[in-house]
Image (cartoon, rainbow, N blue to C red; front, side, top):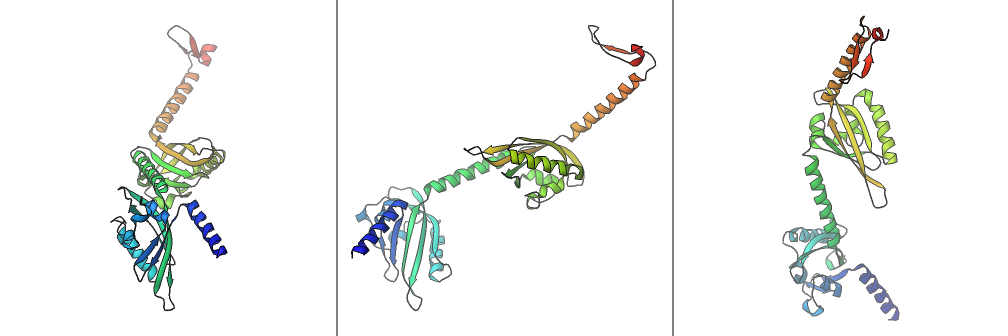
Length: 295
């Protein structure tokens, strides 16, 4: 008896430490023993909860109840090793809270379920964090998918884990085909090696990434893009994510090329001009003279 009391005390301390509420279901008689913590999770005093199984079932959110009951029956039928579900239950004061429920059925020699015991834990903080993350993801996608650039994210080590619809439409390839390092296949062959070398070096150092390369369009044409990426760091300063964008600069590159060619032709003409030629500012400060003028 002393050993049993000691074991029970240890068990209760463990349960108190993890904040779990226990239940022990006498299935044939539709009776359940609910622990004090189980009742407290729902905001009830000890005397306010009977031993009826409806104390549990009636408190489940209507949207979750069919799924939870189906999971119980699947476990009773031996289709799952344990009963494990996350769902909402109503507190005495009105609000719904999320719990994680886990139980195991006990059967007789013929396989009939006699009892089922389990525990519940409050997972409201985790659910709130998950919802905050989902909302953050939604906001990011709304912004990313409204920009004229091709937007992407990568894991800390370098592999790509998100490509915006703009990128997919431009390349004509599915996102799945281009995740990881599949996007490299869309780069001009002359640009791939230097791009991956610079990207891997940047990812290793955690520095900002800036480069220009050509990306193949869905019709086979290549256009120049300027790529910028910055790292997102955790509280310890470790890189946890990369956010990047590609801006189409092909028209600008073509204009720059035309200007360079024009300047080259102009310089060649002036240099070879037989007569002297001098270029000066409005205040007569000479900024250039060709060889004939220097002579």
